[in-house]
Length: 133
Image 1 (cartoon, rainbow, N blue to C red):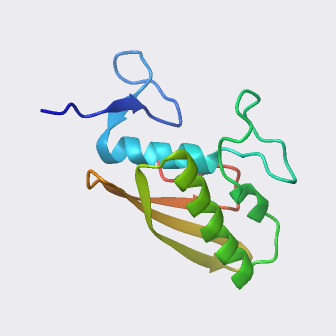
Image 2: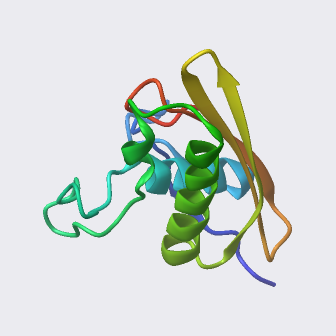
């Protein structure tokens, strides 16, 4: 019998036991995806957000304040796919749906694991964090 993995959820918050909230299954998977996509990874134009691991994260921050066109949408798909492939190798990207409302670009990332857990995580590029709570 295999034991279900559990881990801390992001954004960090307290649970009813006065400890940091932990979760498993789809809740933990969504948290991991948000953590990777919401962390600014090192690129040609930036040095990365985490001083101890500058390469961790994604390049989707480069999409902010750019012309919202077909090229930007495709770059979003590539940045999401590449970051999740590198940092969450057990996760398979099912789809990255791109939406545009005026000048705002948003992504809806759907992923699945080998174990069968599937989640959809919204990514709003008008702000500096990945949504989905």
